[in-house]
Image (cartoon, rainbow, N blue to C red; front, side):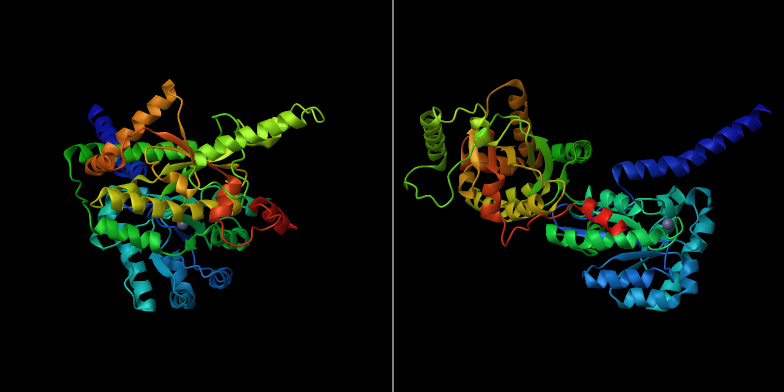
Length: 490
Ligand SMILES: [Zn+2]
């Protein structure tokens, strides 16, 4: 009796380790499959599951064509068998095809042999139609087991999961808005987005199409490309593993640190949106800052912008003193301040992987020049975000705290000493620690080449950023994605 009990418990424990626990570990550490692409590249992969659909797939292909978007379709074998012409159409129009099993089975409840047969059958089907090897595999519902991993590996298939889901399988009022919101709120470099062109609630893919009609032009305006690069990048990275890190400390600590950073970004809504920067919106906590130089004013040439800035502030306040007799509104000063306490500001965080690459260059001069050049390019992308990306459009400016502030005024930033309170000292230590962790040699070079390593606050107003880095005409009265989605319902 008790031995039967032990047998059952043992079986259940093993089953849980085999399925849910294995999946949890893979999801948590993003190992064993592809979850995202390159954080540094402005590419996004749209993926469509459960198709092909005789109702929606062709419409979707036309929509993608109109917006020069290239996607991945994870098709169900049973559907592919019914509609081979749709599989051909997907393939011929330049998209990639992946395997979503034959019957959309749940791997937790499948034997490895059952799954093996299912995968082989679907793989053969796709390869017969397209004459191209099928190597991408998306497990239905993301269900993974030790067995499904082993089978995929044995068949030369790479599991492709996703960075976030559009949650487009439900139905009901306002679904289009929900999809637009789910995607618009989490767009970032290298994202792999889960969507559906078949299945789910009745007519659910119609909402997906409507949402994409709104999202694709905006994604393009923000400066992202919709292509399959993120997945191809991840395939190459996993093929070239293990990456050799030069020092033991880095090899041990860096992977843990990268997990921590990912968690931090998740909690604080920080997204990689340009090659050099991750971006978040933070309330300004450094006190009011006034307008700097009036545009196109002629300046004495030998002065630094910092000194001029304080002169300008002095000038405006004496002007205020002169006019205060006729106009004594108490909020005059606040009106003039460009950035006020608690104003939303876009906070810039360096992309450490990009820094790692730059710090590997062989001379401090080269490092400094390249960093300035890359930052300049990235500021153009930041400007696009402040104009087109609903998450950042309210930002009154940008700021960051950095050790690498030498020469940054040339890019239009104002650099200030940071008040040495406990929080700021802690941030300073953290920045130095990051440099040492990511690239000790680079840190040493930078230190000897660029002098003192004290973090500074650097900031720029919205107007200054857009004047310098936004090319073209700013759109007047651009509606938000949600407003567009609401209009689309009517
Ligand atoms: Zn599915």
